[in-house]
Length: 144
Image (cartoon, rainbow, N blue to C red; front, side, top):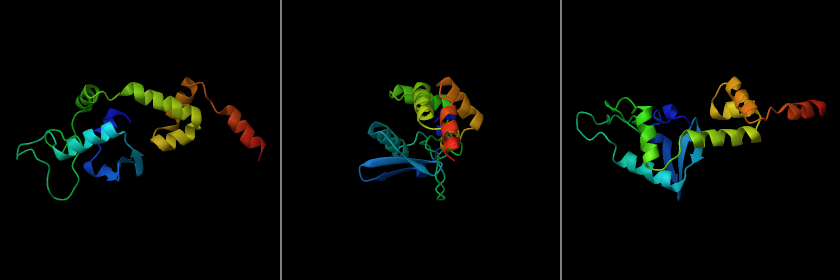
């Protein structure tokens, strides 16, 4: 997930089910690594905005997981990216690796729907991974 989308996450996206922690992204719960779950819990418990003027509203609406200044806006993506690196969480390299793995296992249109990206972008990733799925499409059409 790009950092620009991470900063848009709200606190209600995070939940625990027993020992497992999840982050709901586009209605899909994603199991979090324990180390990341602990960091997110700490962030929710003690957001960076501590002054009464800058605190998030208490009107029942979820606040941003990474509130900015003012808290009604998310923190900047480059700041969150630095925060992730500081805590040993990989950014773009891990995202690219995950994308290549997904695109080699699934057709580009499925990856497009799954990750919410344009089909042309998913197809470009498939070409980058040298996995066009042409053989799969030919075989599936031959069996119909």
